[in-house]
Image (cartoon, rainbow, N blue to C red):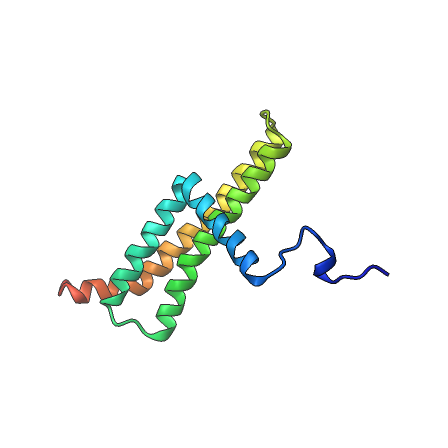
Length: 133
């Protein structure tokens, strides 16, 4: 039986720091190459800053963090899928288009969900904050 120890696998990260460094490089890559990722990160920052002024409960903070980071994670997965398809199918192929469209749809639905959750939590508090309700 083969030894499953990662020390015997040259392609494995040797240290936790190596794993963290490669993950950080992945974050930098997707941030630099994907306009939508920059939009999602900017939106997350704005939502979190606005939330600081609205006296959210712990559960509301949990939901806000969950939906914000879920959108970012889905955008990363969308990019992974798109890059994988491009690697294996550099020319146009109708099936490659379907796969990319479905990955983008996952981001769209996650984004819609995050807007709904954000509106349910934040909108009433924003209206009260500005004395509009």
